[in-house]
Length: 247
Image 1 (cartoon, helix red, strand yellow):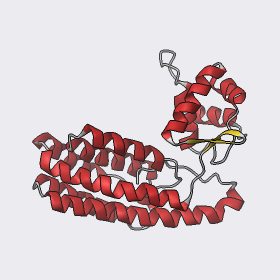
Image 2 (cartoon, rainbow, N blue to C red; image 1 turned 30 degrees about the vertical axis):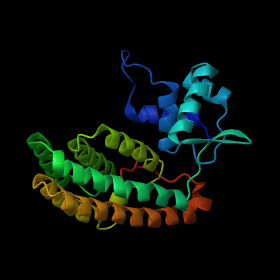
Image 3 (tube, helix red, strand yellow; image 1 turned 90 degrees about the vertical axis):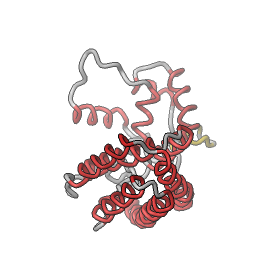
């Protein structure tokens, strides 16, 4: 099993020592982060005793955490017990097939239900996108996620938001971000602006079409990145550098 102890220690050193008053993350939160950040790799066996020692808890919270992670789609049961779920090209297509439609729906509903405050927030995030450098993929991912979640919230549809949050969790399992692909950040910003203009104008059809095109383009780039990752696996052991993706 991957040395999650060492990975956790390196991660903690990078963030700085937590304050004494900061609550300790749960076993579920620790294991989910380890999977999303690639410290626990696809296909890796999850041994309760080792994970309990790493999380500094008993095996019961770890067992409960693994059950939740299985429900999240991040963990699978196998003849070896629980393992980190493997990725596949088919799964990428499945995720995006659903996401393209849901994001397009969110754009359309946002155009119908948005408030003045929603539009002001979206335009503020457009300006924030302009201030981000393509040399900083983490910043691009962060502001991009803020933008799309603001679109979701502008729909004022909690069921739709919940479904998109769950899809975003699955997408975060994939290394790299499509936003770092050559030319993608500039085209994404232009598409974001068109989306906001359509939402502001209450043009549901235009918002739907723009969001659909935006995420279809992200899908095509994601598939190309996934193919490159497969080619690199013999050299990297399947552990590519991670930037938790939002597209």
